Image 1 (cartoon, rainbow, N blue to C red):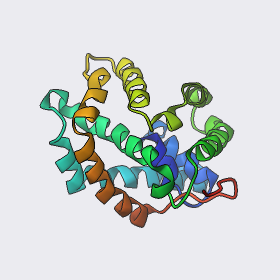
Image 2: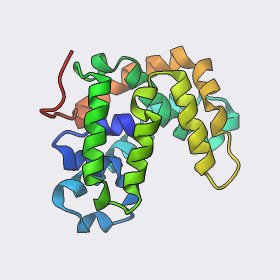
Image 3: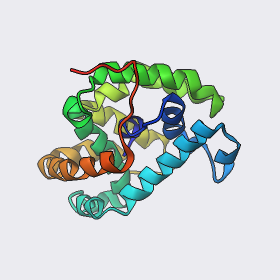
Image 4: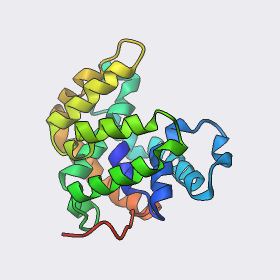
Length: 199
């Protein structure tokens, strides 16, 4: 699961959402020095990643992606799941509206970003400018995200061509997501906030 899914799977408040989102910035056991709700969000992120990494549906999904993507197949799937979540966001989130949820997430993350890293606010600025969260709903948006991700790796990688893998296996991957996502909600729950309305 990538940015959008982690934000959605953040019950318990804004600090938990922020901890879940910025968890990759928190190394090892340094979460212990964070305020309790931030720490809970970091640990939630790790639980989500462990749950999906070990899930048989993920192994099945990896087989649908060309072998030339190698170890990057897991990274691609994280982004692809955000695509399928965004594609029918209201149905997958009990009626949340994607642009409204994205705005709430931007405000929440901007408020809490400095806790995690001096450069964290720049990530949020880039997210807002690039319309990452709402952009996941379109394959072109996925393509932009994957090309940006490709440039962040220090070694040569096939990530920039990942959108083609999504197009090739779209229907089969969508079916897997339909099986996987209800399990994610049951296991982790949905974010709730007075700022998020329903359709």
